Image (cartoon, rainbow, N blue to C red; front, side, top):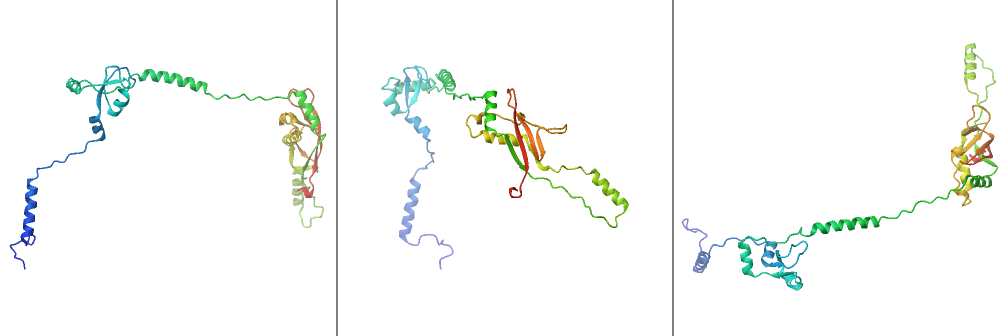
Length: 281
């Protein structure tokens, strides 16, 4: 058992004691090393750049005589051979720094005039490059020719089929046990009920239906398909003050007027509304 006064971490042999002693003396002889941060890429690049003086006015760099810093490779391969800039001796650079002379390029030099010229050129290009929009050319047909085409392609009779409204049959059987008051009320209700024509139909035949039929008939010819017909150009000719010139609500045969704007005389055609058969429903 190890002694209580002696640490168990101390070396137990002479070899271990000698090794530990040598390491301690080596660490003591080494000087204190201070941590140094690495230089940035920009700082390293600034140390490598060379100072040059411009020989001519150079846009975005400066006027002639301006001191700038350049990459050694670019200075050696481009600026110095083309006589754009010349090297500055290190003695001169030292004197410039001592005199606080600005060494650096001027990015705004000669840019304002160039930008104005570019803006003028760009505006001219935009005006020249505006797409040409060809105006729509519509070859209108004269009213006289339109009426001739309507007369040729519209048949004399335009047919439509609609479902007839079935009439309610009045009960003729006697009502046993009904009072006189009930009979009076029934008679009053029957009298107030509006009478429906026996030829009444569900819905109607309107001028829009006639226009659709006319357009379908004109579509078979290229010239006739250019004829413009609207609902205002079609009118039913019906008898009676209550007649609606825009629609028909019963079976029968009716006259319709078709007149395009500018025509002198309307075209008269017959519209026949027949009862729809059971197989057509």
